[in-house]
Amino acid sequence: WLKSAHKVKKPLTSKAVQGILSYGHKTLLEKKCMQIIATTLPDDDIKDLVNMFQTLDTNGDGEVCLSELKDAVDAASKRGKAKGGKRKDEVTESDILKLMESIDSNGNQRISYTEFLAACLEERHYTQEA
Image (cartoon, rainbow, N blue to C red; front, top):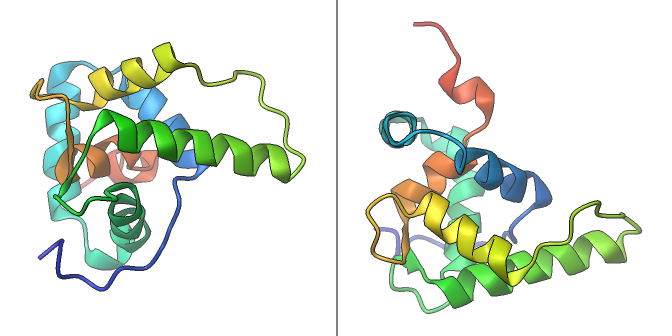
């Protein structure tokens, strides 16, 4: 269904990059719990993330590879600079490799849709009380 969904271009945002960086510091158990939460969220809560994932997945195979992630992070960094933003921490090649390793919980060197959603969840999604 991901491939056939109507594609709306939504570039990777700096907020998403920060969420991904934060996700990298979570334990494997926390990551797996966040993946479960991500699969249960209403479509309205994740539509921007779905569009962002589809934009990242430039070859349309349903996963994001290292080069697709690098291109997206570079583009997000350039957009931030173009808007006059100053980044304290420039994202390096090493940082992008760390991003990939931190999101890729099954070790296949690709980011699945569920892994991406979990990494980009806002704190409000996983701190709500039942």
